[in-house]
Image (cartoon, rainbow, N blue to C red; front, side, top):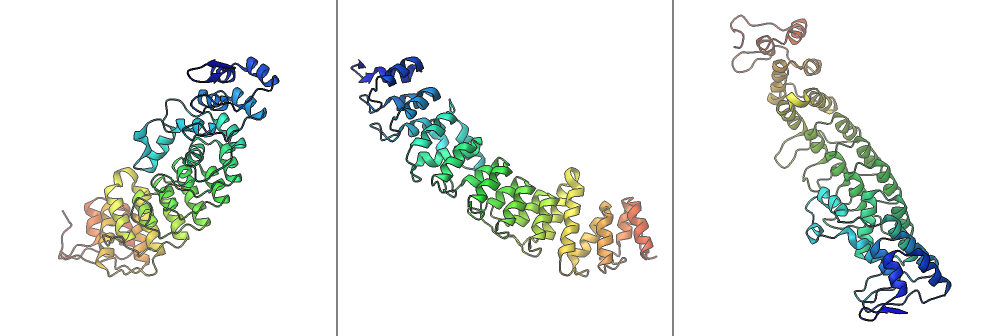
Length: 370
């Protein structure tokens, strides 16, 4: 029965629009045509999906409504339901992973997860359908595991990329959702597409870093949006646990970046520039790098400079490490000053005591650094 000749809507459409379950049940008992389309090609299922009524959608599907009928825009009820994921065209082209994940959630009205799940159960899965990809990434972002699992088990490519080459794995990593990261990896997510490891490192997610490495992530990859190795990125971030995890998995302590900075140089720079914020963590990283170096050249001017720097700042653990590696406790700079001069001048008395115990002396022809 047509109730609006201008739009071609029927009583079934009206029930779906108004969410009137009682009348819908009466119509279903009468065996009405569930797939009748209005003048725009919309079925009652389209209307129910658009209005966000899970009860209406569920009843129609259980009664045999065809979820694959398309309106005159070529959209199924599923397409209509998930279209709300992107309501603002400005959000279609995010610049970063964070922007992308935010765009998955930005809408005046969130897609109804229950409706999306119901429709997916009855809709033919087309893994090339952009709405399917959006729905997959949206479900990962919002942690709708039933939708994620349903899509994967019905053929969705776990590595499908969308917007700036991001995969579902990137989305889960952005949210620090390690449980979902593991689920996706178990389903075959590739840990080397667009360097997921770099995102885990940048988020300082130690457990995700370890998990990705265990699943074969490329440690030396310079991919992603950061353009540096994951090891150098971890050093710059100052997270000792991540640096240790990378070292234990074979990080190259000698590999320089494009500016010819080696890990040791970068760690010293970070310890100097960030010492007021995270001094201990960065100093620990310096020590770790020394321990993993095949050989410490104690005659290298940079290493000697680190020895002096440690005396100035009171980093006793670095002093001990270098002396144990053969550093000359009385090595002098061009002005004749030693590490002891520097430790005395900066009142680092524990360093002074240790240096003296290990043979340090002040040459009579020099005065303390002022």
